[in-house]
Length: 365
Image (tube, rainbow, N blue to C red; front, side, top):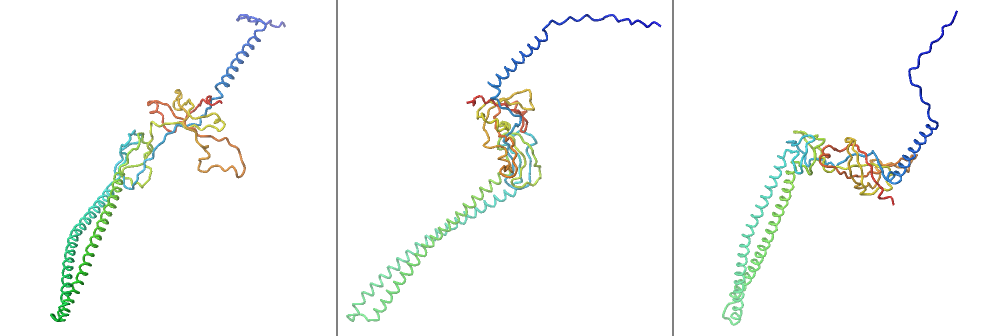
Protein backbone atom coordinates (compact mmCIF):
# COMPACT_ATOMS: atom_id res chain seq x y z
CA UNK A 1 0.00 0.00 0.00
CA UNK A 2 1.29 3.37 -0.92
CA UNK A 3 1.37 6.02 1.90
CA UNK A 4 -0.29 9.43 1.22
CA UNK A 5 2.05 12.21 0.39
CA UNK A 6 1.54 15.26 2.70
CA UNK A 7 0.72 18.47 0.94
CA UNK A 8 2.19 21.59 2.63
CA UNK A 9 0.00 24.71 3.05
CA UNK A 10 1.03 27.75 1.09
CA UNK A 11 2.79 30.48 3.10
CA UNK A 12 0.45 33.30 4.07
CA UNK A 13 2.82 35.86 5.70
CA UNK A 14 5.70 37.86 4.41
CA UNK A 15 9.08 36.47 5.24
CA UNK A 16 10.78 38.25 8.24
CA UNK A 17 13.79 40.35 7.53
CA UNK A 18 16.91 39.33 9.29
CA UNK A 19 18.00 41.73 12.07
CA UNK A 20 21.05 43.75 11.39
CA UNK A 21 24.01 42.55 13.36
CA UNK A 22 24.50 44.49 16.66
CA UNK A 23 20.96 46.04 16.84
CA UNK A 24 20.08 44.34 20.16
CA UNK A 25 23.30 45.54 21.65
CA UNK A 26 22.55 49.11 20.52
CA UNK A 27 19.15 49.02 22.18
CA UNK A 28 20.67 47.78 25.44
CA UNK A 29 23.28 50.50 25.36
CA UNK A 30 20.63 53.15 24.69
CA UNK A 31 18.44 51.86 27.52
CA UNK A 32 21.42 51.81 29.85
CA UNK A 33 22.32 55.36 28.87
CA UNK A 34 18.77 56.53 29.52
CA UNK A 35 18.77 54.74 32.87
CA UNK A 36 22.11 56.28 33.74
CA UNK A 37 20.86 59.74 32.82
CA UNK A 38 17.69 59.24 34.89
CA UNK A 39 19.72 57.92 37.79
CA UNK A 40 22.16 60.79 37.56
CA UNK A 41 19.30 63.27 37.41
CA UNK A 42 17.64 61.69 40.41
CA UNK A 43 20.92 61.62 42.32
CA UNK A 44 21.57 65.27 41.51
CA UNK A 45 18.03 66.21 42.57
CA UNK A 46 18.38 64.18 45.75
CA UNK A 47 21.72 65.74 46.65
CA UNK A 48 20.61 69.30 45.93
CA UNK A 49 16.92 69.26 46.83
CA UNK A 50 15.40 65.92 47.72
CA UNK A 51 17.37 65.15 50.84
CA UNK A 52 16.42 68.57 52.23
CA UNK A 53 12.70 67.82 52.00
CA UNK A 54 11.05 66.03 54.91
CA UNK A 55 7.57 64.63 54.51
CA UNK A 56 5.03 62.70 56.54
CA UNK A 57 1.47 61.50 56.14
CA UNK A 58 0.96 61.43 59.91
CA UNK A 59 -0.64 64.87 59.82
CA UNK A 60 -4.12 66.11 60.60
CA UNK A 61 -6.06 69.33 60.28
CA UNK A 62 -6.69 70.91 63.67
CA UNK A 63 -8.40 73.94 65.16
CA UNK A 64 -8.66 75.43 68.63
CA UNK A 65 -12.26 74.58 69.44
CA UNK A 66 -14.03 76.25 72.38
CA UNK A 67 -16.16 74.19 74.73
CA UNK A 68 -19.45 75.88 75.60
CA UNK A 69 -20.40 75.09 79.20
CA UNK A 70 -22.75 76.89 81.63
CA UNK A 71 -21.45 78.77 84.64
CA UNK A 72 -24.72 78.04 86.48
CA UNK A 73 -27.06 75.13 86.95
CA UNK A 74 -30.67 75.24 85.82
CA UNK A 75 -33.23 74.24 83.24
CA UNK A 76 -32.56 75.13 79.62
CA UNK A 77 -35.22 77.60 78.60
CA UNK A 78 -34.24 77.96 74.95
CA UNK A 79 -31.63 76.62 72.51
CA UNK A 80 -30.93 79.31 69.92
CA UNK A 81 -28.63 77.45 67.50
CA UNK A 82 -28.72 74.30 65.42
CA UNK A 83 -26.14 71.66 64.62
CA UNK A 84 -23.27 72.86 62.37
CA UNK A 85 -24.70 76.40 62.29
CA UNK A 86 -22.22 79.26 61.72
CA UNK A 87 -22.36 81.90 64.46
CA UNK A 88 -20.70 85.25 65.04
CA UNK A 89 -18.95 86.50 68.16
CA UNK A 90 -21.41 87.61 70.83
CA UNK A 91 -24.36 85.71 69.36
CA UNK A 92 -26.64 84.08 72.00
CA UNK A 93 -26.49 80.29 72.01
CA UNK A 94 -28.46 78.98 75.01
CA UNK A 95 -30.73 80.56 77.63
CA UNK A 96 -31.12 79.05 81.10
CA UNK A 97 -34.18 79.80 83.24
CA UNK A 98 -33.21 83.08 85.01
CA UNK A 99 -36.04 83.33 87.56
CA UNK A 100 -34.08 82.04 90.56
CA UNK A 101 -31.13 84.31 89.82
CA UNK A 102 -33.39 87.31 89.17
CA UNK A 103 -35.09 86.75 92.55
CA UNK A 104 -31.68 86.60 94.20
CA UNK A 105 -30.73 89.91 92.62
CA UNK A 106 -33.98 91.48 93.85
CA UNK A 107 -33.22 90.20 97.35
CA UNK A 108 -29.85 91.94 97.34
CA UNK A 109 -31.48 95.13 96.10
CA UNK A 110 -33.83 94.99 99.10
CA UNK A 111 -30.88 94.48 101.45
CA UNK A 112 -29.21 97.55 99.97
CA UNK A 113 -32.35 99.60 100.53
CA UNK A 114 -32.60 98.39 104.13
CA UNK A 115 -28.97 99.25 104.80
CA UNK A 116 -29.38 102.75 103.37
CA UNK A 117 -32.56 103.24 105.43
CA UNK A 118 -30.72 102.18 108.59
CA UNK A 119 -27.93 104.60 107.80
CA UNK A 120 -30.42 107.44 107.28
CA UNK A 121 -32.16 106.61 110.57
CA UNK A 122 -28.88 106.68 112.45
CA UNK A 123 -27.94 109.99 110.81
CA UNK A 124 -31.25 111.42 112.09
CA UNK A 125 -30.34 110.19 115.57
CA UNK A 126 -26.99 111.91 115.20
CA UNK A 127 -28.75 115.18 114.42
CA UNK A 128 -30.89 114.73 117.53
CA UNK A 129 -27.85 113.86 119.58
CA UNK A 130 -26.05 116.99 118.40
CA UNK A 131 -28.91 119.01 119.88
CA UNK A 132 -28.67 116.98 123.09
CA UNK A 133 -24.94 117.70 123.26
CA UNK A 134 -25.58 121.39 122.85
CA UNK A 135 -28.20 121.24 125.58
CA UNK A 136 -25.81 119.40 127.91
CA UNK A 137 -23.11 121.97 127.19
CA UNK A 138 -25.51 124.85 128.13
CA UNK A 139 -26.54 123.01 131.28
CA UNK A 140 -22.88 122.56 132.18
CA UNK A 141 -22.22 126.26 131.68
CA UNK A 142 -25.25 127.11 133.89
CA UNK A 143 -24.04 124.75 136.56
CA UNK A 144 -20.58 126.23 136.42
CA UNK A 145 -22.04 129.74 136.84
CA UNK A 146 -24.15 128.62 139.78
CA UNK A 147 -21.16 126.88 141.34
CA UNK A 148 -19.03 129.97 140.96
CA UNK A 149 -21.75 132.13 142.54
CA UNK A 150 -22.19 129.69 145.45
CA UNK A 151 -18.44 129.56 146.04
CA UNK A 152 -18.27 133.36 146.00
CA UNK A 153 -21.14 133.60 148.51
CA UNK A 154 -19.39 131.16 150.84
CA UNK A 155 -16.19 133.15 150.59
CA UNK A 156 -18.10 136.41 151.27
CA UNK A 157 -19.82 135.02 154.37
CA UNK A 158 -16.61 133.70 155.92
CA UNK A 159 -15.21 137.12 157.07
CA UNK A 160 -18.67 138.24 158.18
CA UNK A 161 -18.95 135.24 160.45
CA UNK A 162 -15.48 135.98 161.75
CA UNK A 163 -16.52 139.50 162.92
CA UNK A 164 -19.92 138.27 164.16
CA UNK A 165 -21.97 140.01 161.49
CA UNK A 166 -23.42 136.68 160.31
CA UNK A 167 -24.06 133.43 162.05
CA UNK A 168 -22.05 130.32 161.46
CA UNK A 169 -25.24 128.57 160.33
CA UNK A 170 -25.46 130.96 157.34
CA UNK A 171 -21.85 130.19 156.43
CA UNK A 172 -22.48 126.47 156.64
CA UNK A 173 -25.52 126.85 154.39
CA UNK A 174 -23.53 128.82 151.83
CA UNK A 175 -20.71 126.29 151.86
CA UNK A 176 -23.19 123.43 151.45
CA UNK A 177 -24.77 125.22 148.46
CA UNK A 178 -21.30 125.76 146.92
CA UNK A 179 -20.47 122.06 147.34
CA UNK A 180 -23.75 120.97 145.77
CA UNK A 181 -23.19 123.38 142.86
CA UNK A 182 -19.72 121.93 142.31
CA UNK A 183 -21.20 118.42 142.27
CA UNK A 184 -23.79 119.55 139.73
CA UNK A 185 -20.96 120.81 137.54
CA UNK A 186 -19.41 117.32 137.65
CA UNK A 187 -22.74 115.70 136.79
CA UNK A 188 -23.35 117.99 133.80
CA UNK A 189 -19.74 117.54 132.62
CA UNK A 190 -20.22 113.76 132.65
CA UNK A 191 -23.56 114.12 130.86
CA UNK A 192 -21.87 116.21 128.16
CA UNK A 193 -19.13 113.62 127.72
CA UNK A 194 -21.70 110.81 127.42
CA UNK A 195 -23.67 112.80 124.85
CA UNK A 196 -20.53 113.38 122.78
CA UNK A 197 -19.60 109.67 123.00
CA UNK A 198 -23.10 108.81 121.89
CA UNK A 199 -22.47 110.78 118.67
CA UNK A 200 -19.30 108.77 118.02
CA UNK A 201 -21.26 105.53 118.59
CA UNK A 202 -23.98 106.62 116.20
CA UNK A 203 -21.41 107.53 113.55
CA UNK A 204 -19.94 104.02 113.91
CA UNK A 205 -23.45 102.63 113.32
CA UNK A 206 -23.68 104.72 110.16
CA UNK A 207 -20.40 103.27 108.91
CA UNK A 208 -21.66 99.79 109.74
CA UNK A 209 -24.87 100.36 107.79
CA UNK A 210 -22.87 101.74 104.87
CA UNK A 211 -20.61 98.68 104.98
CA UNK A 212 -23.66 96.44 104.92
CA UNK A 213 -24.92 98.38 101.93
CA UNK A 214 -21.56 97.98 100.21
CA UNK A 215 -21.57 94.23 100.89
CA UNK A 216 -25.08 93.94 99.50
CA UNK A 217 -24.06 95.96 96.44
CA UNK A 218 -21.14 93.60 95.81
CA UNK A 219 -23.49 90.65 96.15
CA UNK A 220 -25.88 92.37 93.76
CA UNK A 221 -23.09 92.74 91.19
CA UNK A 222 -22.33 89.03 91.52
CA UNK A 223 -26.04 88.24 91.22
CA UNK A 224 -26.31 90.41 88.10
CA UNK A 225 -23.31 88.60 86.62
CA UNK A 226 -25.04 85.29 87.34
CA UNK A 227 -28.20 86.66 85.79
CA UNK A 228 -26.30 87.65 82.65
CA UNK A 229 -24.60 84.24 82.65
CA UNK A 230 -27.95 82.54 82.16
CA UNK A 231 -27.54 83.51 78.50
CA UNK A 232 -24.56 81.73 76.95
CA UNK A 233 -23.03 83.65 74.06
CA UNK A 234 -20.37 82.79 71.51
CA UNK A 235 -16.98 84.14 72.46
CA UNK A 236 -15.61 83.79 68.94
CA UNK A 237 -16.95 83.33 65.43
CA UNK A 238 -17.19 79.76 64.18
CA UNK A 239 -19.49 76.80 63.66
CA UNK A 240 -21.47 74.78 66.17
CA UNK A 241 -20.34 71.19 66.56
CA UNK A 242 -21.30 68.23 68.74
CA UNK A 243 -24.38 69.94 70.20
CA UNK A 244 -25.84 67.82 73.02
CA UNK A 245 -28.06 70.34 74.83
CA UNK A 246 -31.82 70.24 74.38
CA UNK A 247 -34.64 72.53 75.48
CA UNK A 248 -36.03 71.63 78.91
CA UNK A 249 -32.87 69.78 79.92
CA UNK A 250 -31.42 70.39 83.39
CA UNK A 251 -27.75 71.23 83.04
CA UNK A 252 -25.12 71.26 85.74
CA UNK A 253 -22.42 73.85 86.17
CA UNK A 254 -19.48 73.13 83.85
CA UNK A 255 -21.30 70.53 81.73
CA UNK A 256 -20.27 70.63 78.06
CA UNK A 257 -23.24 71.62 75.93
CA UNK A 258 -21.58 72.07 72.53
CA UNK A 259 -18.28 72.93 70.87
CA UNK A 260 -17.62 76.12 68.94
CA UNK A 261 -15.13 75.45 66.15
CA UNK A 262 -13.49 78.55 64.63
CA UNK A 263 -13.34 78.39 60.85
CA UNK A 264 -10.57 80.97 60.39
CA UNK A 265 -7.97 79.37 62.66
CA UNK A 266 -7.17 76.09 60.94
CA UNK A 267 -3.68 74.61 61.18
CA UNK A 268 -1.90 71.32 60.59
CA UNK A 269 -0.29 69.17 63.27
CA UNK A 270 2.30 66.99 61.52
CA UNK A 271 4.05 64.28 63.53
CA UNK A 272 7.57 63.91 62.11
CA UNK A 273 10.01 61.20 63.12
CA UNK A 274 12.80 62.29 65.39
CA UNK A 275 15.27 61.44 62.61
CA UNK A 276 13.62 64.10 60.42
CA UNK A 277 14.04 66.96 62.88
CA UNK A 278 17.71 67.73 62.25
CA UNK A 279 17.21 70.64 59.85
CA UNK A 280 13.64 71.60 60.68
CA UNK A 281 13.22 75.20 61.80
CA UNK A 282 10.37 77.64 62.46
CA UNK A 283 9.41 79.62 59.36
CA UNK A 284 10.31 77.00 56.76
CA UNK A 285 7.86 76.62 53.88
CA UNK A 286 5.58 73.60 53.62
CA UNK A 287 3.55 71.95 50.89
CA UNK A 288 0.31 70.40 52.11
CA UNK A 289 -2.04 67.94 50.48
CA UNK A 290 -5.39 67.26 52.11
CA UNK A 291 -6.76 63.76 51.50
CA UNK A 292 -10.23 65.22 51.01
CA UNK A 293 -8.88 67.50 48.24
CA UNK A 294 -6.18 65.41 46.55
CA UNK A 295 -6.00 67.60 43.45
CA UNK A 296 -5.28 70.80 45.34
CA UNK A 297 -2.01 71.72 47.03
CA UNK A 298 -1.91 74.18 49.89
CA UNK A 299 0.98 76.24 51.12
CA UNK A 300 2.00 76.94 54.67
CA UNK A 301 4.97 77.36 56.97
CA UNK A 302 6.28 75.90 60.19
CA UNK A 303 4.64 77.87 62.98
CA UNK A 304 6.13 76.10 65.99
CA UNK A 305 7.74 72.86 67.12
CA UNK A 306 6.58 71.00 70.21
CA UNK A 307 8.99 71.01 73.18
CA UNK A 308 8.72 67.24 73.49
CA UNK A 309 7.66 64.12 71.69
CA UNK A 310 4.09 62.93 71.74
CA UNK A 311 4.98 60.18 74.21
CA UNK A 312 6.16 62.74 76.76
CA UNK A 313 2.75 64.40 76.86
CA UNK A 314 0.72 61.19 76.98
CA UNK A 315 -1.34 60.28 80.03
CA UNK A 316 1.07 57.46 80.89
CA UNK A 317 4.50 58.35 79.48
CA UNK A 318 6.81 55.38 78.90
CA UNK A 319 9.30 54.52 81.61
CA UNK A 320 12.23 53.21 79.62
CA UNK A 321 14.41 52.87 82.69
CA UNK A 322 12.48 49.80 83.91
CA UNK A 323 12.09 46.32 82.46
CA UNK A 324 13.06 45.26 78.98
CA UNK A 325 13.73 47.97 76.42
CA UNK A 326 12.72 48.11 72.77
CA UNK A 327 13.75 51.23 70.93
CA UNK A 328 10.88 52.89 69.07
CA UNK A 329 11.32 55.89 66.80
CA UNK A 330 9.55 58.79 68.44
CA UNK A 331 7.55 61.50 66.67
CA UNK A 332 7.59 65.23 67.34
CA UNK A 333 4.42 67.30 66.73
CA UNK A 334 5.06 70.24 64.40
CA UNK A 335 2.43 72.94 63.98
CA UNK A 336 2.01 74.12 60.39
CA UNK A 337 0.23 77.40 59.65
CA UNK A 338 -2.13 76.83 56.72
CA UNK A 339 -2.51 79.40 53.96
CA UNK A 340 -5.99 78.86 52.49
CA UNK A 341 -8.63 81.19 51.12
CA UNK A 342 -12.18 81.52 52.43
CA UNK A 343 -13.62 79.09 49.88
CA UNK A 344 -11.21 76.34 50.88
CA UNK A 345 -11.85 76.93 54.56
CA UNK A 346 -15.53 76.24 54.00
CA UNK A 347 -14.61 72.71 52.90
CA UNK A 348 -11.80 72.03 55.35
CA UNK A 349 -12.87 70.75 58.76
CA UNK A 350 -10.93 69.66 61.81
CA UNK A 351 -9.65 66.10 61.84
CA UNK A 352 -8.99 65.68 58.09
CA UNK A 353 -5.87 63.71 57.16
CA UNK A 354 -3.08 65.44 55.33
CA UNK A 355 0.38 64.95 53.87
CA UNK A 356 3.02 67.55 54.67
CA UNK A 357 6.35 68.18 52.96
CA UNK A 358 8.74 70.73 54.47
CA UNK A 359 11.69 72.26 52.66
CA UNK A 360 14.62 72.30 55.08
CA UNK A 361 17.35 73.42 52.64
CA UNK A 362 17.65 76.77 54.44
CA UNK A 363 19.10 74.99 57.47
CA UNK A 364 21.62 72.83 55.60
CA UNK A 365 24.51 74.57 57.38
